[in-house]
Length: 431
Image 1 (cartoon, rainbow, N blue to C red):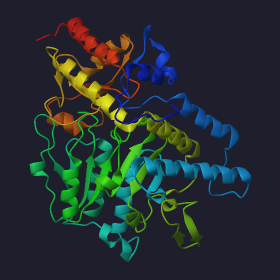
Image 2: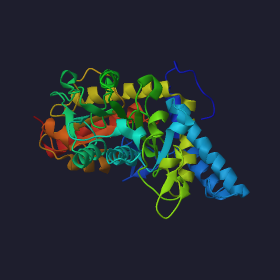
Image 3: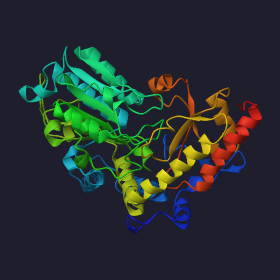
Image 4: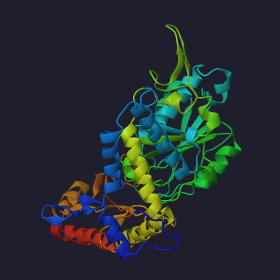
């Protein structure tokens, strides 16, 4: 994709077919059938532009960044930092507010362990507002991915703070009337888009409530940054995390956004080379952010490839992608809900959504559903999707998830709906 198209023009069928030509894997067959890839919520596919960008770096510029004085090192550093700027512009941040990580999980743990280090006195007086202890509270939700739950469980255990959870109702919607945010709250960690329900949460209300009592907010944007226009300034979040492999990029690259004034006072998480100014045998002084949080050899070619992915998404247009996926998501939910014997998790939630739906067929294990669909060349996700508390609250142990992206078609959505009908007929469990 080389030109940007007006944001108010929907993606046409012809454009989607042209987009699909950029993804070699979508032209393949699985089990003798054309691949229907509906697992982009786990890992998206990569266009040629992304594959080429990483290969070009490896074959023409490969070198250590921020270390050498030779030409290759200088040029590698320049493209590495250009990639940081590309991501910053994509989410409405400044360059020095973007910290490279291996993935969103590491980014969340970075914040959690930095707060933990602040809580034992690291960071000095400037980090006082980050410290937690008995009587302080961390708030998350019942629908979180484990990556945005377990680090806060561990932070509470290390500091003596209390972890509280915003519950969900029988459909899976957040019970904002029971948000449990109060004057003791120090941090609120919430998902922008549920990786199980596909709904876009009304995070603005939670962010406003958190800031009203002086709490910090971390936004899990793993399922929103690839699919929606994302502006961290407009949302007024303090931290946000994302993963490259969910937004057309490679694995092994993610990012943390943090407000500059917070990153400047946060003690580091990982320590070692490249993040220091002066080291003696007894102490060290650290670079300013973001380098303070980027110890060791960085993910240089992956960052370059992620920047290429962002350029690709920008050329297509994030508003157009969001519109396309909401239509696919509604088609998924409506089609699956109309099948006798299928329960779509979150189908009753009246909120905008991305192109994702998870469902349960009582009497058929999700693994059997996934295997039956795979025999037809349809790739979906099965299991608890790293969200056991949400599944437990909704009364199921696992579900089958179909998730779309900009390269997905209505025909593929219809294929999974037809496949579910065939699954039920094959196992003979129609109610």
